[in-house]
Length: 247
Image 1 (cartoon, one colour):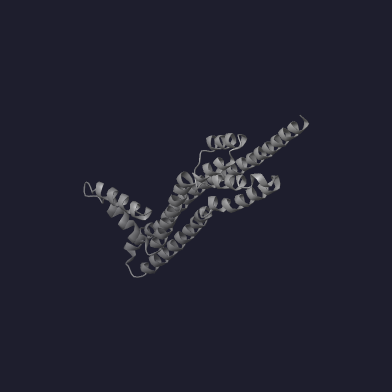
Image 2 (cartoon, helix red, strand yellow; image 1 turned 30 degrees about the vertical axis):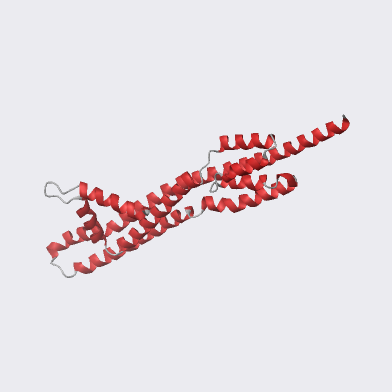
């Protein structure tokens, strides 16, 4: 089931659970009236809202579940396997988390473990460059959607005001004030809806940016630890060989 379908079912359930009371409009009727009064530009921003929610939900699911890997215990197991000479088992351990960027970067370094420090560093750097965009992609869309939604809302408000002022010329003088206040209120629906979308986008942008940045830093830190680990392992093997020769 897609995210849009789930959102649709949730909204339908909310509307059904909140019927009109005391002769007043229910939530569903209020929403319908709100959109109807705002004009066609409301539906443009509704598309912006759906896009922002789709991007946010997809990124949250990807970062929190598909890409998430508990780094400390993972690296602890990798360290034990490498120091005991079980590099192949360490590579297989990375394969147990095929979607996690951290596991992919560590695996890239482990597969070059016997080719020298320079090869390990090159492999790790290449994997980092490859994986980092996967952690940050589509998140900048939210900032752009916030700006576009705000501008669309303002344009919708302007068009609503133009429509209202044009209608004033065809009504009696005693009705103009009422029509003007009602028309301005309806026109402002676009701005209110647009600003709400912008606030939501900015909040998701801040959360996702901070989380993805933290994941990137974690991957980079543990990649450096792997390089140092393999470097110490090589130095230890060399010392052991020298000791055996001297004996």
